[in-house]
Amino acid sequence: MTTSSQETALPPTAHGGHPQRWLILGVICLAQLTVLLDNTILNVAIPSLTREMDASTADIQWMMNAYSLVQSGLLLTAGNSADRYGRKLMLMSGLAIFGVGSLAAGLSQSPAQLIAARAGMGVGGALLMTTTLAVVVQIFDDRERVKAIALWSTVSSLGFAAGPLIGGVMLNHFWWGAIFLINIPVAVLGLVAVAALVPESRHKAGDRPDLLGAVLSTIGMTAVVYAIITGPEHGWTSGQVLVSALTGVLVLGLFVLWELRIEHPMLDMHFFRNQKFIGAVAGAILVAFGMTGSLFLLTQHLQFVLGYEPLDAGLRTAPLALTVVALNFTGVGAKLVLKVGTPAAIALGMTLVSAGLAAIALLGGHGYGGMLLGLVVMGAGVALSMPAMANAIMSAIPPEKAGVGAGVNGTLAEFGNGLGVAVLGAVLNSRFASLVAVSAASLPAALAAAGSPEEKARISDAFASGLETSQLVGAVAVLAGGLVAAALLRRAERAESA
Image (tube, rainbow, N blue to C red; front, side, top):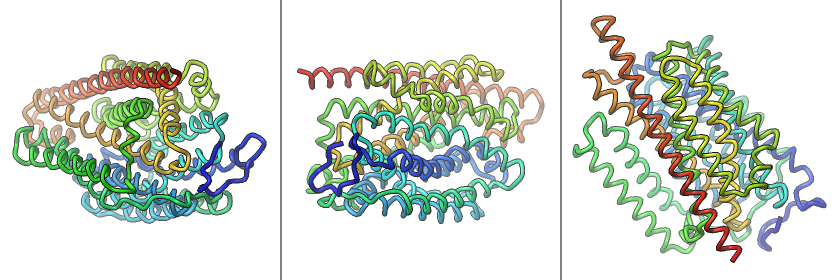
């Protein structure tokens, strides 16, 4: 791997990578897993939080989105800080902050406290997400980097598999706060391993953190997603929703103008002149949109509509992640990228993700068989597309900007995650409200207020119909995004060749 003259050098091997690179990859994947377990465990706990904390659907969405939005706003600043002050230092700081935030979340007594704790955890998550991928780019050369990034991205799927299972077991034996406390021993173990094994690296002329840019991006995305979440409840043309949406768009516009003016921007807008970068950006947002939004809906479907307990629901979401883990640990995803090229791998992968979402919507309405097929197909698509897109983003950015590149990749994923939950949740709420006239804020409350078994059945059918519509919306978005991303990447490759 070629490094900048201003980049602190890592010990090379005959192949140009760090001599302990595979062991270090295992360590940073453990740190990455700490963040990802939290998100997937929370999905399984949605019904428990709804009942025990009397949380509304909007509360649940904010419990999920508070973490994602804070993390999204800080990822680029965290990447800049890692490049300038040291990637190992920022990685250890992220583990410590995330552990403290997990303790606060586990001891929360109200939805507001849990939302605030989740926002604090987002600060630690931002440091972790940027530094892990930046270290991968630093310690692996071009020959091995695609395979390393594939294994790194597989940890996301391992989190999807292990999170619901761990969450289901713990919810069957403990109170919901234990799902956050489980993060603490993992964070401590990660701290010890990072301190012992991960080498320090930094770009000596790294850019200053862009604090105003971080504030603007966080406020802008929060306002936009708030409008999406509250639209079905207050009406899309209500003053509250319109003011929030317009504020978000205006602030994000100011963010772009600020980034274009300053000497050390959080996000260099010149990256968006690179067609390879733009194609990877489009794909990364939409695959995260479809995957996270569908899991948010699927866990509710399994528990609320089909009647599974939390542990059973967790077991039934595992095939998606296990498919990704199996394909990437055997090297299938990386081999396909190298054989057919990044554009074709992304097109095929996102088509499979879309087909899986459609199968869940159309075949999984009244039983698990159709869902199983859709989950396996989605897993195959994610295994092919996610490593290809992460590698495309990182290869479009200079090595000395590895932290910034990781920040961009993480921002896109988290932005897609937040939009997936918000948009597909909004579609579900709108469809549900159009089919049954209920004033309750959640499905359990609506069922509790129902006056007869027939009314309960009608409410459950309406909720299932809303889930189906939401999944199909996600499938269309992912398919369109995949085709656009592949076309842009193919065009960029042809321009480079010419």
